[in-house]
Every structure is written in structure tokens, then in C-alpha cells.
Image 1 (cartoon, rainbow, N blue to C red):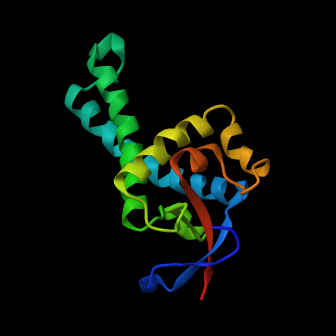
Image 2: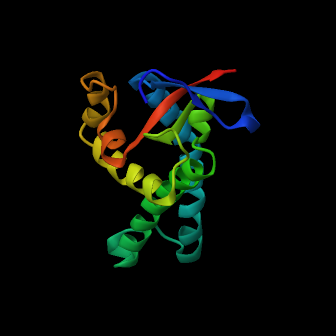
Length: 158
């Protein structure tokens, strides 16, 4: 993927430059996405709180608190995976002109998007060290890019 340009989706009239996105744009997209995710997680949390009339804690809800917490992770995962499969972009990625693609420049599959999300959790968890790795990597790939055989590219207007 080095050098040549990847063609983007004709319906949105953009072309991926083939250049891996830097940390700043990735982080900015993550911040944008966090606002939408906060709203989705508030809605998800509101349902059990209204139904049980108390906080979802192990002391008050028993094992259901752990089911609730797994659901929080699932909501976040579904948000990213569905958007990456559908268009290669989350809301934040659209705002910052980024797209997740395979190493060959093709749209992500369910498998590649799921791997990207799971490895992304690992890459972001230790103080974003796995994402900052893109400054050391010869192809400017973060850990989750390399491990899932995907990448985030900057889009340019055609």
C-alpha cells in the first residue's frame, strides 16, 4: 500500500491517499466518537436504572451488574464494528477525513472489523502506547493496524 492511491467509494467522492493517519487525527476522531458513545451509553444505562429504580452495582444487582458492564462494552464494540463494515468510518472519522480499510485498501469485513476493535482495546489501554507505536513503525501502523491487517488512511477530495 505504500506509494499509490487507493480509490475511495464513488458515492462519497473521495480518494484515500494511502497515507496512514497520524495519532492527532485518530485521537481527535476518538474524542468526537466519545460524545456520541456517551449518549448511546446513557440510553443503554437508563433502561435498567428505570426498570430497577437503583444503580447497577454488584451490591444492589448481583451478577446482573456484570451482564450490564458486558453490555456497555458490547454497545461500544457494535458502534465501531457496524460503522467500519458499513462505510469504513465512524462519525469522528468522517469529521477528520479518515477511513478504516484492509491492508489492500478494501472495505473491512465482520472479521477484520471485530479484530480491529479487540486489538484496538489492547493498543489504546496502556496509555495509548500501541497507537503511538505508529511513530516508530516503518509503515506508520499502530499495533491494532498491524495485528488486524487493517489501517486508517487519510482521505482527500478528488
